[in-house]
Image (cartoon, rainbow, N blue to C red; front, side, top):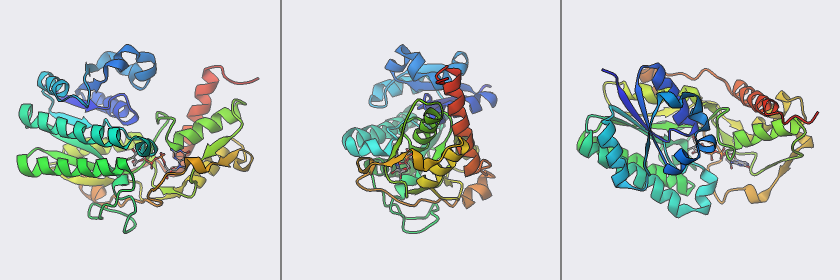
Length: 330
Ligand code: G4F
């Protein structure tokens, strides 16, 4: 029988790669989208546009328990990947309340619905390195204490414990993937990686004059998103539910990302980068590096795209995109 998977956040970077991956594995893929997305497919469904005819999309909101209940009742998934969230850390300082409410309640609603309607369904929660925040040790692993430094991080710590609670109290097969930064040519433009590569491409093509950034000394552990969605699926294929750090194990500063991106485009970063104090966050973890030894050992998961290649993939894709759109100033 065809396996049915349900993805929240299917229109996002990870959701779109995961949907492609699951289709290739022979799953029937269902996704939850907001009603506004269905009304504006060109802008809101662009990441899944090429596979739309193979997907089953359901209109529901993370803020509405009845709407999630209805979808789970209709779909009866065997695997549920909960990726939807307000996941832009910078914005979580500006709107703490909606970030915490949506992220926490959305996770709670989905878990509760699964418990009521599909208790055999396996559940993946998108946890994050932001839960470590001001990390007490480096690299961080599944036993490292949490010290979140943003409302987003706080909301994810709560979701992590809720997920564990449903596993312990109700025997739901629920796993947390503690994923570090994972990027791609489908990343949203507000995240630093895509902001850098899209602006470098615009500068290269004569469409922008500067790249304005916040704290460029912050260090992150960056990987390639398609590899991270594979780890999500692997977790749900295990005999027992468990939590895993998913990371490259390498850390690089935003500055290194900048230099490499400009170099890929044949430009000197010094001519274009402006540091802007207004883009600094009130607080954050300045150096995050994950130890994915448990995922290597138990899941057999390894990342293969190194940092340098990731930056190159993204810069080249952004230049190609603008070129194809005919935005080149000749
Ligand atoms: O790209 P970022 O916004 O990602 P951040 O905050 O590390 O979070 C991302 O990864 C997490 C782990 O997977 C996810 F949980 C989360 O949802 C999100 O996907 O910022 C990266 C670093 C930060 O230190 C930030 O302060 O870049 C620094 N930065 C410097 N200038 C900037 C900028 N970040 C952004 N977005 N924009 C800037 O101009």
